[in-house]
Length: 232
Image (tube, rainbow, N blue to C red; front, top):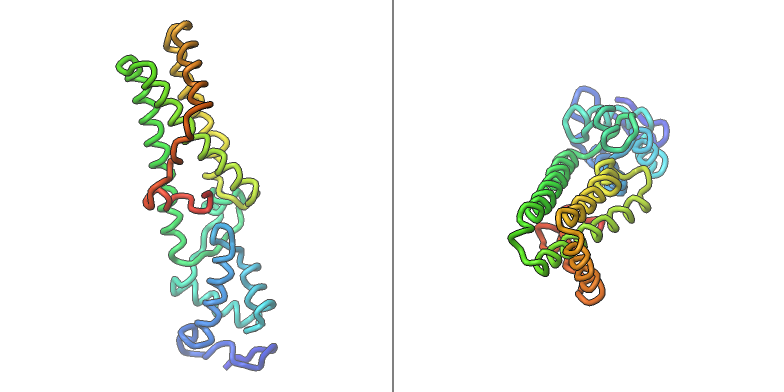
């Protein structure tokens, strides 16, 4: 039996499954608590160890290493390899998370992809059906979509400012590239009209800006609000 130099308590029960004990569950609970407090639910091993060993003072460094290695083998803690970690955070060191994190991250990616697809499809719909809509209806549709996209972009940029380089690159690209391009594509449709008609439509759009209430954000329903909950 190996004992901790800090507490005198056993760090590991040799020859047995030592993680499924009161102490093992306590260590795992503190690891989860630390990761839950991180902006993206991920953490470096050194930071996790410092939290459990130094701040919580419930086990020695050696005991933590033994338990942590076993948690990884049992799948109670997941390792995010360098390549994936760089895609998510911009840094190329390994990260660790709880098992349900990867499912949430995949869901988030799918929802972002779904958002981009749905908005692009709607902008293409306006582009190809502009001649089938009367000018006022078309201008109203552009105003509605522009308001939603600008609201989304503002919330994304605020999130970037508050989380800094810890924020996901997917969010950063969405805020700095994807949504601005969607807005640009939206207004490019006006160039397909004659100058006289286009100027009249832009005057109508300015009237809407002054008089009409802002449309509801893109994520308004309970289902839609599952995506990027921290932005709202």
